[in-house]
Amino acid sequence: MIATPDKTLDVPVAIIDIGNTTVSLASWYDGNVAAAVSASASSATEFDKAFSALLTTFPNESPSAVVVSSVNPGVLDKVRDRVESKLDRQALVIGEQIPLPMDVGVRDARAIGVDRVCAAAAAFDRLHSDCIVIDFGSAVTIDLVDEEGTLIGGAILPGLRMQFAALHEHSALLPEVSPAMTELAYGRDTTEAIQSGVCRGLAGAVRALVEAYAASLNKWPQVIATGGDLDFMAPNCDFLDSLVADLTLRGIGLAHTKYLASKGA
Image (cartoon, rainbow, N blue to C red; front, side):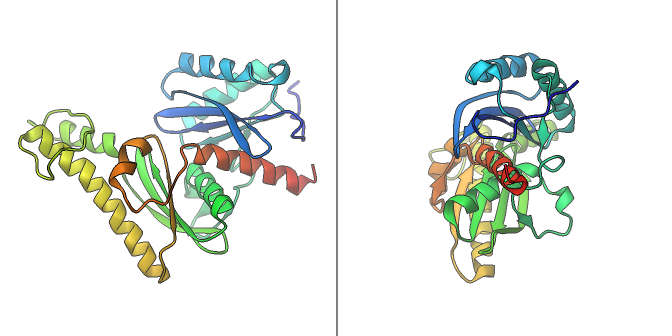
């Protein structure tokens, strides 16, 4: 019989963010993220090692709950199975057993990426004001949160590696290159031209969207950024106010905290 998770925070919670390419794991206790590890979303072996390493940080290797956010259904199914086999309890999935951590004002709240909502909730919890939340991940998302703490919409565009791969895979002669910020704005060969176009172009596209959001609000809100490519992109985006690498994980923990509060735990 599968055990019911304890509805207390006396023992830290295990939080898991399943993305398109990476699974991030950590513990959550008293509003803090700790013991963060990651694994490739395509490798069950890597996840097992990361999950086992995380469990060693909990008393008796037993978190009070395992809380999951996922945008990758196939990997989510595998993670559910692994949690049940390892801990004899169900993972709590945001958007299923646990409600979204903030109000969502888009046309179909069920269709929005849970990771976007978690990051936006953590950003609002941190800033307590309207804000723009940028996630430099496999896909780049730029979301807008109003002053009431509602995610009212956003934009999605291909991330760095997706753009590089598309140019290489959908052309006969363009080479496969890695992200790099070129010395000059224009490329002096094909590789530099691709790097400049993708890297500078992405920074410019995000800036344009941030400016458009600010114009729609008639004010310049705080801009907070996260994501796997944050360290690469941040030096080239001088419009960013806050950099929080674990923003989505914080949002997952926050979702569980709000869930417990709603249950009176």
